Length: 254
Image (cartoon, rainbow, N blue to C red; front, side):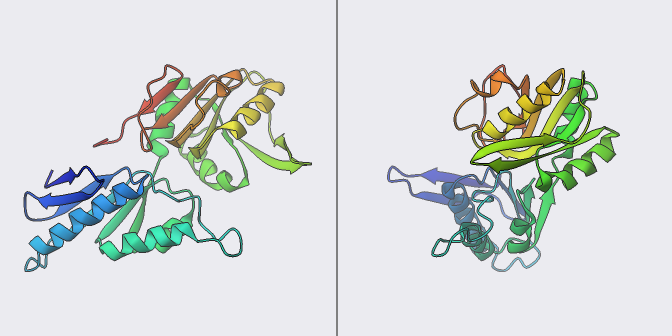
């Protein structure tokens, strides 16, 4: 660690550089405080390296705040991801790595951005379960899940969800009878969509249904999910979870 962060009683954060040279800041990035801490560290580092033109500053964000707000949804509303990315760009890092971003918009809006793949974590869940069928939860996730299925030599079943009179209707496009299934997606807020998908898979004969998400918020707990999902796999990019229902893969530094 080449820096220290101090937080004052009023919420202010301040940074101090403890060692000169290249720096690699790693944050969850799921709060504005995290981003402001990174900005404070970078400002202090810039001041220490005014004459060191070869020093490199890198930023890794494990769970980018606002990544689902990747457009202006309604007239008069703020484009939140654009605001967040501008704040990151103003820090002027040499590279910004983001774990499993929700959409390519994040990478497009952030200067010098690169994606950290989640495939290794999916593979850990895949191996622990024992060669399950991969399930993409919607059309948006199909391409990424297909790429993972090819790498793991796994079967893939696409699904899709539409709303009819406000109620979700899920279609499963493949045979899951007597098979173990692993739903793969980037994040879970409440998780209700996955509950309904798991229910549909089991109605079509799936033996067990597991869920992998990289960014595990689960803001409403797990009781409802346990009705249809057998186990959850995730990283601790968003938070640490202590529940036997969850297998959590730890990220470096968190």
